[in-house]
Amino acid sequence: MPAYTLDTNAIIYYTGNDERAVLAIRPLLLSGALIYVPTVVITEVLSVELSEEEQAATEMIFGTTQVIPLYEHIARLAADIRKNTRLKFPDAAIAATALTTRSSIVTRNVRDFKRVHGLAIESI
Image 1 (cartoon, rainbow, N blue to C red):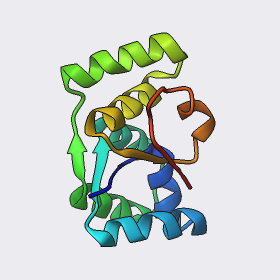
Image 2: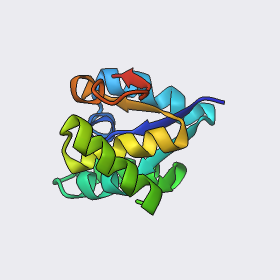
Image 3: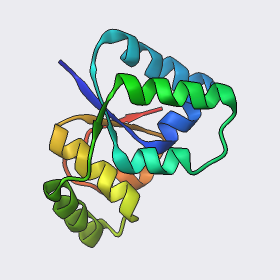
Image 4: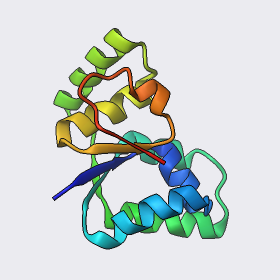
């Protein structure tokens, strides 16, 4: 079964009803695919102002996906990714989560994530 890790921008665009994001993510949510959300994504998403509708959609995503904490293995892998690619910490942690879970990252930030060797990317 395919698995996906949602990047922060994927959730923000989806909850903001961006057409491309909705067309890409809604089928994943409805298909029963494994969908992961790193805890750093929760921090990033909840640090911006959200409307009531966006907040409700965000909480629905968090409640219907598997939240992945920043375990030591993921933290160490994120450190290696940062060292080798110069990605910022949140992106390195998100990439490390996707690699650890063997999932494709769903993002608009293709340019930065392409620097991570072995990372499968689904562009929205």
